[in-house]
Length: 372
Image 1: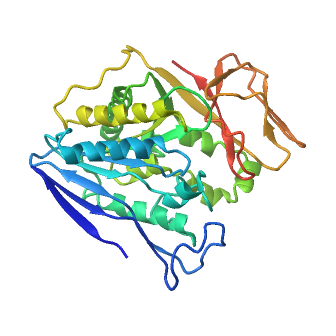
Image 2: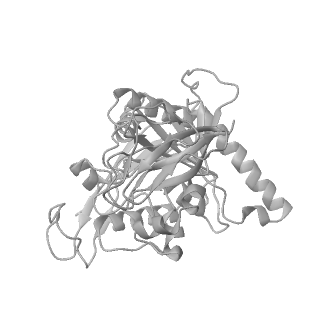
């Protein structure tokens, strides 16, 4: 069962469908530790939509697609409440917030139950579990944002956090595959979008930008792809996260904020300030951006190699925090059949998004390096 509430706040109208999970023939939930149901589920995402009288850009906020990353949801709900109370006033444009994309994983306090929901988000995604259906529901919502010409003035901010201590940063989306083979005019369009996207990232209040996340996945070795349960053909779809789905459905800019450590209260403040600054950057509010330490040139980190846990014997070695600096030749992963070391080339190497408790067939994190 699902229902809608319409609430007016001056020039704003909010439509909020409550989240619902509708199984075909039995009451949900069947128990989060049960086997997936083969006959599927109907998923209704929780959605809050606000529209000002004056036209403008459309900002979409997504949060808690990973159940053990609470900061984005808490920050998003704070913004929703402040818009409803009139504390935040939208001057123009539209704002859509999905504060809780995966309530099942939240209930279990895990990243994901059956799958990593922030993968395989594309029109051909399918599968039997509720988390597969959440992906399909996201695609259905994003399709509404893409007009006949394939684009619209909409922007995506996806909110996340990391397991280990580390500072906040923003991940920008990868350019579409084959983008550099377009016409000169097309290349200029992509270049302008990339510049605007990095400006958007920098406006959120962090001084570190990560890039080429998807490229690092595409460089995975064949045993990694097998461990992840994919073929080379299905693997390319697997690497489509929310920010890449945003691109596919016409977002002008599409970024992910990692607001800090999962359970750090400060990560909520970082996420909240980022939303407020995103509203200002895209012209939805006339309020000044919230202050943050100025930086003339952000630090640019490039993902280089994904570290997949292939079997039970494999463990990370000596990793204690996110963005930990590494030395050339340093062992970062050790198992019964292999060791993974940092490349010997001289560079500012680090480990990004380490997950020491990753299950077999999931990723431990990424080797990355500072390029600027």
